[in-house]
Structure formats: C-alpha cells, structure tokens
Image (cartoon, rainbow, N blue to C red):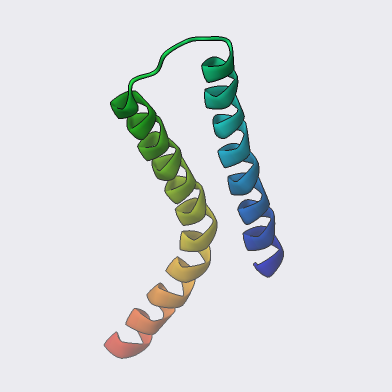
Length: 74
C-alpha cells in the first residue's frame, strides 16, 4: 500500500506540473486566460487528485472498516 501511495503522489506532482506548464506556455504565447478560468482549472486538477487518492486508499480502508463492523455485529 505504501508503494501505491508514493507512486500516486508522484503522479499527482506530475499532473500539477503538466497543468502549470500548459498555463505558463499559454501565457508566454499570448493567450490571455482570465483568473477565474485558471482557478477553475486548478479546482478540476484538485478534484482529479482527490479522486486518484480515494481510489488508492478506499479499497484498503474498506476491507478494514468492513472487518471492524462485522466484528462489532458478532
């Protein structure tokens, strides 16, 4: 699980770097992006990162939570 989390964090960093570079290049070539558009782009990136994190963590936590709940019921 630790390996999956570290790999995921590397992917999240790469995703943020790619989005930053795209915004930077668009600014260099003269495409004006309003500040709200840039904020919306970063919110979307944050939601994608959150989804990636949940997909890695929930299967491992789900098994533990289900086992704990089953133990409480018995």
